[in-house]
Amino acid sequence: MTKFVKLSIAALALVGMSATAGTLEDTKKQGFVKCGIDGGLPGFSEVVSGGVYKGIDVDGCRAIAAAVLGDASKVKYVSLNAKERLAALQSGEIDVLVRNTTWTQTRDTSLGLNFAGVNYYDGQGFMVRKDLGVKSAKELAGASVCIQTGTTTELNVADYFRANGMEYKAVAYDTNDQVVQSYENGRCDVLTSDASQLYGLRTKLKDKENHIVLPEIISKEPLGPVVRQGDDAWFNIVKWTFNAMVAAEEAGITSENADAMLKSDNPTVKRILGVEGKMGANLGLNADFAYQIVKQVGNYGEVFERNVGVNTPLNIERGLNALWTKGGLQYSPPFR
Image 1 (cartoon, helix red, strand yellow):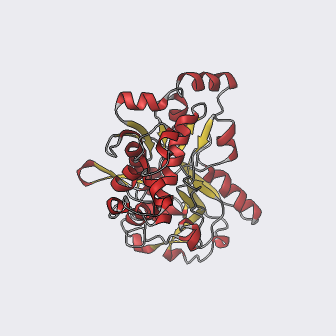
Image 2 (cartoon, rainbow, N blue to C red):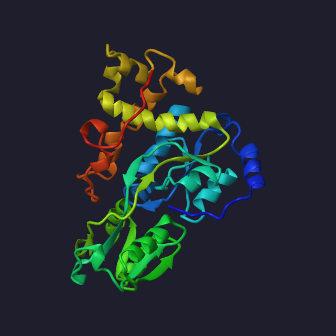
Image 3 (cartoon, rainbow, N blue to C red):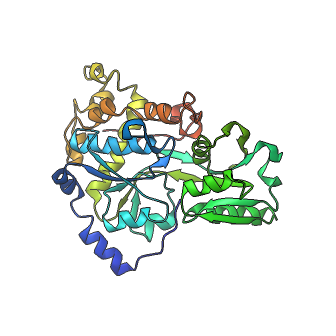
């Protein structure tokens, strides 16, 4: 989602030397995972009643804590806007960024970052008021478009309108709340962002039933957890924490049946749950790291459905985020 002013090679080297070495040890010493999130995006990360954090990204943070510390509650959440999130990770302010952030070539190379997987396959879309009478994004010539700065959204919009020979006026703001307020107050005709964000932001509107998300998806936005380069051990932990959630769903292991599945004769289940093999030891974690993730947080399907699924206000179908066996893209490398 963001673009960030590139650090010099020397600066990146210093970051790699000072901020990434021994993240696992540092996390154990401090007793919690410092996890960067949005903090105001329904379905992904928001504070609900009682000051509780909730969302797909929040559960990603909780899963890492369960894997590393055996307790999903041991997370310090750091709310970051789009412009500051990557800098916070680069500087070591946070241990991991799980904040609806798009995996791009630039971010994965020149910014000194590693993406550990895709926890949500997304794409950019457009939301408009029903009374505008627009049914397609190709009818938006001359429209004013609300955009969050510091995101891939800006370039995607420019590319889309240029490719379709249309003019538009960009109305840019720093935060999601500013974008939503501007759109709701009629300062722009269109709100554009990742489609998942549009469904989430729509729930914040006073008259949400009067707004629609247009059918066009104009980009690829693979969202996922991010760590700094230079600490392969931590990179592996974050990567295989997410893989464990997907693999558990593939194997039929849920938060409800995890205890019973410890007695399973299925060798794949045994390896995932740590009954057999050295999956935990390979990561420097306890043998039951994946069991703790699933028992305390849930498998990927459980996390998806309770946060953004069809029985939530966002009402999002699994789509591309279904398992590969059900026509989607979610797929874990084997636990063996």
